[in-house]
Image (cartoon, rainbow over all chains, first blue to last red; front, side, top):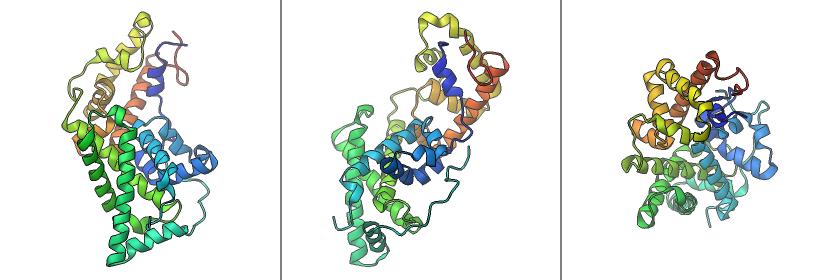
Amino acid sequence: MNSWRSLERFLRTDPTDAGCAETFELLDRYVERQLAHGDAALRYPGIAAHLSNCNPCVQDFEGLVAAIGGPAGSASPEK
Amino acid sequence: MTSARPAVPESPVSPDHDSGAWVRGLGASGPAHDETVASLHGLLLRVARAELRRRRAQLPLAGPELDDLAHQAAADAVVAVVRKVGEFRGESRFTTWACKFVIFEVSTKVGRHFWQRPTVAMDGEDWDRLPDRFGLDPARAAEWHDVVAALRRAVDDELTDHQRRIFVTIVLNGVPLDTLVAELGTTRNAIYKTLFDARRKLRAALVTHGYLDDDVSRQP
């Protein structure tokens, strides 16, 4: 194993990477799919590729998972 | 970069009961609309506060300043949700769809906060930070020294001025991407795309000069 593997990994780009805008557009569906079936990466491979490279979008993904895992996930307007 | 939509479109769906109530309330007029907006604000404020608590280890602020950020994020997210509710297609629960706006607003506010009170240098070009940034072991510097030198030449020779600025600010100076978004008044997607193109060009240059294989990295 070479000693600059992390640098090499950073420089490697995935042509299927969906980018931040598309990831935001689909993030709600991606998160629900992941929580319900665990296969969001198969259904949305471009989002999965993006989330393996974009820390800000990973933060948003983890934040949305945390948010809808709590009481907010089933709230109705009356609550 | 390519579209992330599934090859097989998802079937059109009707919003679930709760989601339908949210959409009808936001589309109503008078007290019904106001009550729904107030409920939405309450929900998004709770989520913003929870999200800021979740991220607090990375944030140099607490107490009233943190709560002020939560209020700003919730208020802006409510505006975004009310403006875009006509685009909601019921492909997720309304609350999931709405929460992504407040999570994004939290990211935006945190990025802007760092820009207004920077904790790292936004300018300058300190290549001495690169080994630490990528966990390069000083004891094995003989193995990576030439690669880093080649990378530096490629940054100077191959990147546009804009790509170089983005690369240096994020990679060398460690400025959060959302902070650079605030500084440049652009979008996260635009900065990411610029960095994506820079990474691709730099890797191609290292491959051309024999430091990396076309598919797998060169063994030392």
